[in-house]
Every structure is written in structure tokens, then in C-alpha cells.
Length: 510
Image (cartoon, rainbow, N blue to C red; front, side, top):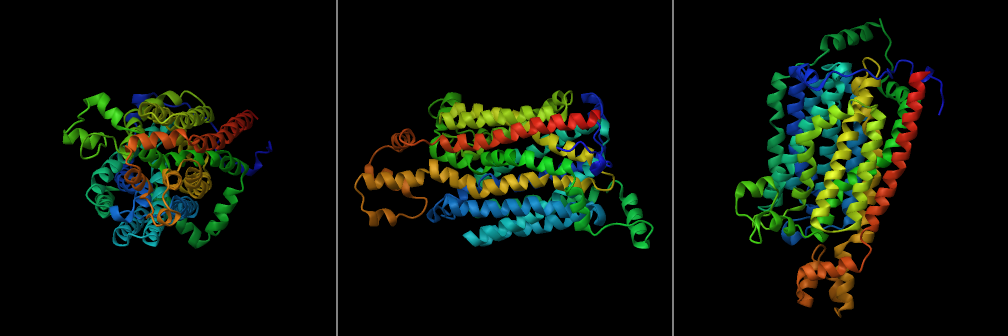
């Protein structure tokens, strides 16, 4: 790595001492809370679909699902990831020039259209096109929101601001899957209609929104038009910033982490649905009869019988923890260098994946999700804080768009290969088809089984209890290997973050 600072002389590499927790909270302006509210609403709708997308994809057509293979699901997720994470690289610069309010409004319209397309066209291509619209809308939405946040905070309170913002976001991330759990038990299209209605509330927030730094933006645009200052074509401007070593190395270092991170959300719900007996958790808490309390069923993400935790409910522990404790982790990590906190978070996340691969017991799955959540709280808010801090003046939204690049690389690769890895090492559908053939079902009958119905067919064909067959399949296949491979990929990122941190420290001292 080069020691020359010429390529990024206008980037601010200083680590600024942060205010205390309560002083930081008190210093946050009303516009910070407005954009937090808009992000919360957007996340409720977004995670309402995202948390259950894999379950919808693999659910048989007879149950209202898409009835597609995990390979086809991976194609949808890969294209979704590519769109959502590469669009902000350029829309960030557009937001800086056109205005944050205008781009937030446009993105909300696009996202509503995406949800409605998913509802109206329940097919592979319908869901794919809806996902593309949703991804494009999200990619336009993010830079405007995050650019506003940067301009409405100061360097002395950024750690707490990003921590609280991430916590508020996860209130939406917590509520969205709960909406999906109960809507999809009625019918799948209800999930999409509900999400379209929910995100419409952002139009009300926009009425109270005032863009910070608008006068400076308009004055800058006026000077550009009059020729007083020169501004490069947007893509050239973005490319100039992207070529800086500090940005290039950032992308390379964090790409592998985002492969690991997104595997949890894209693949773990499927893993839990297929291999984890979550009724154990309900029995531990409420006894063998479960609970008929509707309030508890909603907030814990239980099924309508109150006897098991739905996969989205299990994963929702992640958002619930962040929602309630992210500001505490932000206060703790504010005492350390940003790259040190991110390295610790990456290591915790890797260990969580090792635990997921090692066992399918429900309470150990809870432990793994808790461990991952602490890791996420250490690393994810920090990526925005880091990029927002080093961005040159007038390019805050552009740099916050760059944050999405390593996520784009990692998530796109995970989208295409994560579900494939799972299908290769852990697919209950494929294992059930193999066992049916072993137990004497003809090849013609096996091939005629509709996608998503292999295990239920196995239970009916053998007459054996579902849980006993699940245990048999789990014990006769190396299901943990998929998760170990993903953990190994994450380890590449941990080594990279360590080296990147040492390099940045050397730059700051030179």
C-alpha cells in the first residue's frame, strides 16, 4: 500500500474526539429524527419482503409460493443485490446536485411500484421485476437520507448519531418481519400490499423535511452554471474519487464481510425452517401447550397456533437487539479507533457462523444470532461513520453511496452463490428426493414431485414422524459445511480489516 497522501489530500483522515453519550444525543437536530423516521418506515416495508423472500421463493405453488429452486432464488437475489448496491454509487452524486428531498420522493414512488408488481405477478419474472424496482428505489433512497444525516451532525457526535440512526433503522427491521409473519399466514400477496401501504407514510414525513445545506447546494449549482467553478461530469467525478487508494482498499477489504453478512438474512431463514425445531423455545418459555396470547404471538414472531417460532421471528432477535442496545454499543466503540471496532465486529460475526454450522439446536441458534448481532453493531454503523468522515466537502452523499460498493460486490456474489452453497450441502428438498429413491419410490414418481413438496411427500410415503426424518437427514449429511465455507470467506475480510487499520494509522501519523 502506497504511503503517498497526494491522491486523497482532500479527504479528512482525522479521528475526532466524540462528545459523551447524553451530550451527543442532546446535540442531534430535529432533521436527524425526521430522516430517522423516514428510514424506519422504509425499513418496515423493505424487511417485510426481504426477511421472507427465501421462504416465499421455495414455498410450493400449492401454498401460494413461487415454487422455484434455490438456484433460481439466487439469481433473483444476485440481481437484486447488484441493482441495490451499485445504483447509489452514482445516485449519491445526483442527490448532492439535485437535492435530497427530490430524490427521496422519487425513490418512494419507485418502491411502491415494486411492491405492487410483486403482488400482481406471483411468478419468477414478476418477483424478479418487482425486486429490480425495489432495489432501484432503495439505491436512490439511501444517499439522500444518509447525506442529510451527515450534514445535520458534526464530527464530534457522528459516532452516536450513526449508532442511534442504525438503532432506529432496526426498529423498522424488527417490525417488518413481524408484519410478514402474520400477513403471509393469511396469503402471500397481503405481505406486498401491506408493504406498499406502509412506505406511503414517508410522504407525510417529507412534508416536515427541510434539506440541510440547501442554500449552499443551490449556490454551488449557480456557480457551476455561470462558469465560476468547474464541475466534472458526474460519472467522471465519481470515478476520480473511486480511484483513490483509501476507497479502493476499503472496497476490497469489506467485500468478503458482506458475503458473510448477507448469508445470514438470505439463507438462515431457510436453514431454520428446514432444520431447527423452534418449538423447543416456546415449550421452554410457555410449556408444552405454547401460548394463545395474540400479543405474544405477534411480538415473538410465533405461528398462529403459538407453538413454534417462525424463521423470521428467530432472525428478528437480531433487529430486536440492535433496536434496544445499539446506542450502548455505539457509546462503547466511540472510545476505540473505527477500524479496531470493525475488526472486533467481524470476528464475532465469523464465530456466529461457526456455531450455526456446528449444531441445529434452537437455543444455540439463538446464541449465534445474539453473537452476530453484537458483531453487526460494532461494524455496520461504523462503515457509514467512516465514509462520512473522510468524504470531501460537497461529496458526502457520493461517498455514502461508495459504502454500498463492497456490499454490492459481497452481496451480489452471495446472492448467486450463497443459496447454491446451501443447496449443495444442506438442501432438505434434495436430501428428501434422494431418500425417497432409496426407500423404493420410482424415479418417475420422484421426478414428478412439485418443487418444494419433497419432504412432505417423504413423510407421507414413509409414514415416519417429520421430526425423526429431519433428524435422520441432518445426521447423515454434512450440513454445517455450507456455513463453515461462508465463515472462511469472512475470515479473509478480518485479515484485510486488520491490515487496512494499520495502514490508516500509519497515514494519520505521517
